[in-house]
Length: 533
Ligand code: G
Ligand code: G
Ligand code: MN
Image 1: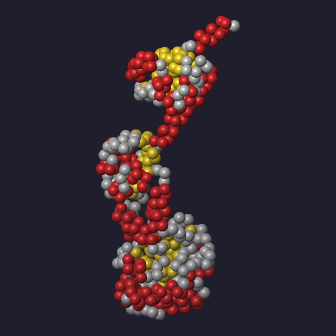
Image 2 (image 1 turned 120 degrees about the vertical axis):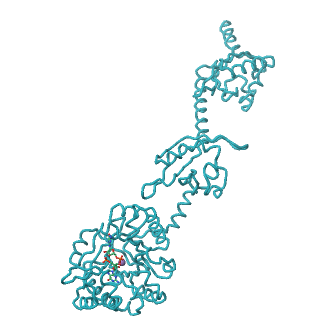
Image 3 (image 1 turned 135 degrees about the vertical axis):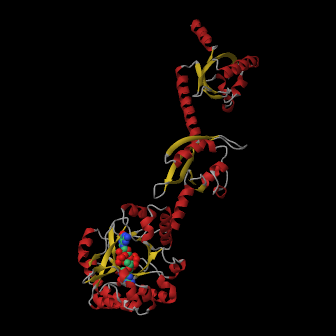
């Protein structure tokens, strides 16, 4: 029977248990970082036998130490092909973590062939920590001092105690293949993988995904921030004679300069921890000249920046967890169609939204909004990112600019017709622009020429009829044609005639009046003068 104790003992004597090597790949570059050493029994009759059939036997009969030493010896023989960067990872059984001689045994094997311990990773399972955590801690501390790296194997299946992560000087977290295998179909597995990666990142550990079989999984892992992958996608475990081929097949990780303690991998681990990245994102978020928020599928505020909170007139905290509809009941109907479209996967940019003042003291606002669906790794919409820019001032500036253009046109106009002085008035009869050529200019201050101040320059007898005609015109849009007297610089009353017509806006309302005013005394005086000559 295969796997009987005598067989295992015999296998060790005959050196039939040999290392296989499975590549470990840097997910973002596709580079080869090293190999995990996996035991295989090359049985003379039965062919290759998997570890599940002999490891526990070896453990039970205290042959596991010997098994490891034999594997290490053979694995280290392959050292030359690994160069100065590729690593080897070996599995050490739970039972071996009781034995304080473990580090010495490993060191002896490595020194014998000159394998650098910096390129050796020791894999530990959580079960090893259960019966004697203190001893396991002492052993791992010694391994670390020797320069080895420490990886927690099959993470997520055992006890996954956060205490273990805290107590051991770990460098890596290996995510069990059961999660990786189902992560593309099961949201739950995906969340567990994401959580393990996040946990690893926040503790400064390299996360390694085991059992990566498809491109889709590799892609998703990369998106989640997982740095390393191992699995059939990259390569099955192979015997030593296949190593050169594999090393040649993958680009290697870049040679590292002398690594700092706890910074062992040949992987360019990101400098910023997720918490730091989050803080930085938050800073960008807060400093953005736009209001930003993220809404979940129920249109609740998951996060938002201060600017948006200010725009909405409530503190940031008051928004969190509440629905847009609750926060902005008056405006929500304007946003809802866009939000729903975004939840359906459409990205909508640059929608102009008018926020009419709803409370006293508020002013109307115009905003430019974008709605972007947020997808998770399985391409499901999980919420909407909203960006809102207040463009009220821009709109006002545009208006002022068009007024300025009006004004330039006005000056030009004035130069061309020196008897006819152009003016511009708003829909309420307020004078917006009147050329300085308007006769009573010097008698009325600039401010008075503006708005309704121009009426003060009129002869009191003319004021009534002018106002009546103006009111009528403003109401009906009927062209203005009025005559009135104004006093010039010398105090002389002169007759003026003012004519103008309305300009209509897009929705049919009067937006401006354009007209000219002329001195109707002047042509006659000039004519008189001409006659006298
Ligand atoms: O690749 P494979 O199916 O052979 O591995 C099955 C299990 O056996 C894995 O959990 C692996 O960690 C374990 N294993 C493989 N090689 C060794 C070894 O040399 N020592 C120990 N203790 N476990 C090993
Ligand atoms: O030591 P550990 O428990 O991590 O052992 C790795 C085990 O996973 C080994 O049995 C190895 O043969 C196996 N394995 C490696 N890659 C894959 C893979 O892509 N898919 C599956 N199903 N098993 C894998
Ligand atoms: Mn392993």
